[in-house]
Length: 169
Image (cartoon, rainbow, N blue to C red):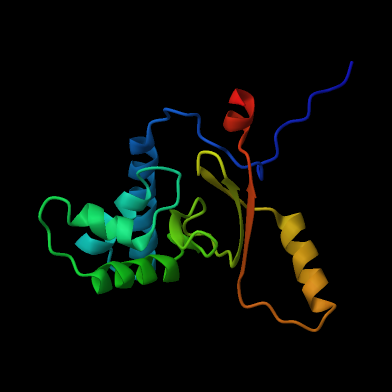
């Protein structure tokens, strides 16, 4: 009989379909407030609204989707206001930009000082999970250092199929 391995704390969690995102959003806003308080910055109304929209699901959202949602009720938010809010949220480690999708996802490790992030992106449902893998970070750091390259930031985007979509295929 083989002993079952305990799941690693680095194992990404893909939320189940139909999962209640309101709890995630509420927790993210609480953490964001704490991060901003600790850093003596402000989570203004527009920054909060943008963060709430990003946390409505675990699917990355584009800036113009955010703008459209902000203006859906007849609002008149300008694109520059959304981009400034996104810049603030990224600078404070509250969201990440996924270059391959030109979209934003909430940071699963708010308040942690991490300049390396890896993302697993389901090509079927779009759900994205943040993977904080120290071994992967070390391997990449070592590989680029061997080539004399200095890393400023490290975002790795891995496309594939999440466990839920794989199970229904």
